[in-house]
Image 1 (tube, helix red, strand yellow):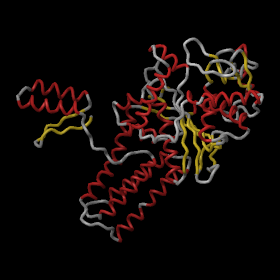
Image 2 (cartoon, rainbow, N blue to C red):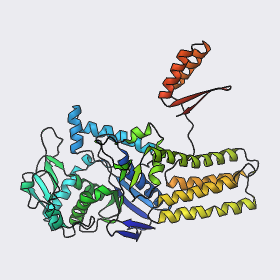
Image 3 (cartoon, rainbow, N blue to C red):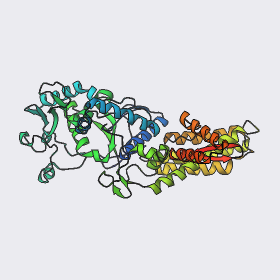
Length: 468
């Protein structure tokens, strides 16, 4: 299995620190609002990476944090007149709902920054003791130049950064020994949440949070650290500087970063009016379609989101779901149980699609090519499965399709639709209105249901419905 390592800028053979185990840390969202589709890409990508490792038999310790103390959270709390804790807990709960709808497996651990402050204070003190950090008026800074390898991940040169006027923090510039030093701890401002420390009552800088949480739940050295490519600099660069200075050893063996997501070929931003939350997308599409769409390109490639591409993803996913549904229908009506010799041979031939799938995933998790292998299997299923086949053959093909799609987090067995009580009641009222020949009311109820995404069809057998 080969992984493209951002550090070396090349694909490297994956060799775990401990045989049969993978320690993986993925930077999670800052929880001040509903997650947007840019947040969704690393969630889906690295969930799929985790699933493939597990498919290959690895025991994966998968840690992904929630940043629940941050300027944006505090700003939102002040706007609403509530505590920062209330904002972060609300949006963690909403984030979990969206992740569940995207079929993201629960992490081994989702640490919260606010619950790990003591460990961060200890790590900062270690950096001070080792001469990598210093305190000025309650703020603690990291001596960037003291860490000789600074820039090794982002491939940036410190002198170039300085000449370009690049600074890593916006406050207290005059207090720094060097403009490139960044903050590890900052004193509180009026109305902000704060914790006690030897230097001031305040809160940690963003970068130290991940260094400490990764160390606590995975150890001083990990196999894979991952996130969006926007985190390479300065966040991941600073994490390396902190962790390696404090722990005295290489932080992560492999660094994985997904490419940017654009909307209609433009960068997503609220000012352009092309900013979409996952929740907004879920009102138009099943989030399995979003997941399929995200996996249709290689994770390191830039990905363009558009209504047309989502419709194409919907149609493509439907082909897979229809094949699975057809197999279950045929198996339920199969006349014979066990495979014939001919069927065993046919089933054996389907292994080539599994091999193609694994080759794609072994090559830096190329989900686009892995999906191509799934479609080849679907085509094979459609040409070899019919009403004359045995139940064992049909079930075995279904299991094979399930095995591959499950790695991608795609659910192929359609869930039975269950209407909530309100909608059932509306359908009954409409039926009653029709019997009373009150067609104006019946049409009004039909329109209301359509607004809720429910399409009614009046047939000889009665009313049938489907989601729009």
